[in-house]
Image (cartoon, rainbow, N blue to C red; front, side, top):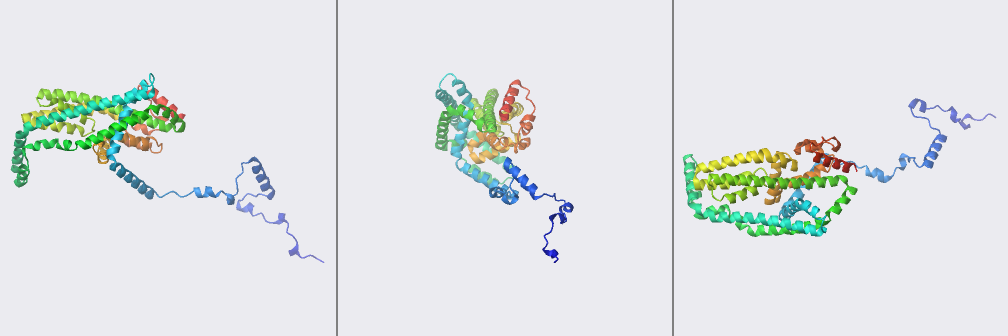
Length: 430
């Protein structure tokens, strides 16, 4: 009896090979079994797609949209700046104390070779406090000299104001406005130039106490800084390079600014003595202090002596003071000083000016003194420490070469700087 062909099992070899026309490689069950066995034996095989680890799939989450990421970043920065501004009376003195400790650290490091490290830290602390004492004493002395001398020029001040009001009236300015302003002036109003400083004496003392306390604790902590820095390259070599560059930049900035401030102050004292302006030493102290304020410090140091020259001698001495100050500022602070200070801070003139406006709004009076060091700190944390963000140095840094990878930067001309750069590259290479 013939068998039904539908019940006869089909020979697999007689089936059409669809892989030959679809481009799919033909793999037999035996081959798959052998490959899986071989991979399983060697331990290098991959699991099928259906058995991929769930944690690996969940880790591949889509990134945030760029607009949302930028918005969240700006919001975080705004909140942080609002927090810093609210604590400016604490953060400002502490950051200034950190700068002073960084400047004095080389002295402490040398002394630690011949004495105990905590004794070396104590000596560095005494040196910092001595410098602060001399600085504060000079400022107080200059202020007292102003308080004693300004009342002598009340009559000249009122005559000057009256002349200004008459000139304004001749130019068509409403005379009633000038008369109201002139009527409100009293003989003691010339003292209002310095009264804000006197009225805020308690706040200044509080800030100085915070500064001294911060310097004390930072100096004591710096005794163990050498051992901490030895561990840093084992954890993150790039972090050690960033910390070193920041400390060297801060140290060079304060030293060069102090040296050039003393030079400018000496030149101003000599020029004012020749012109015959009173209180030349007080104006020298003012010129030295305002040299720490970038960009606008020159104007702050120019106005008081020019005004006093106007009151004591007339328009000619005042004009001579303005011309001499402008010449000295152009030669020393525009042509010479940026060659040294610009390299120490490493930012362009525009960034320097914008940083002054920004940090004064955030840190108040301390922001004027700490604008460039604070900018250097932000640049070190956000730009120099991130290889993907260093391209911004093309527009921020005074030397655009810092945007290049470390191995592609040009060799410094100075042998000392060349050796330091080689050590830096060796540290980055591990």
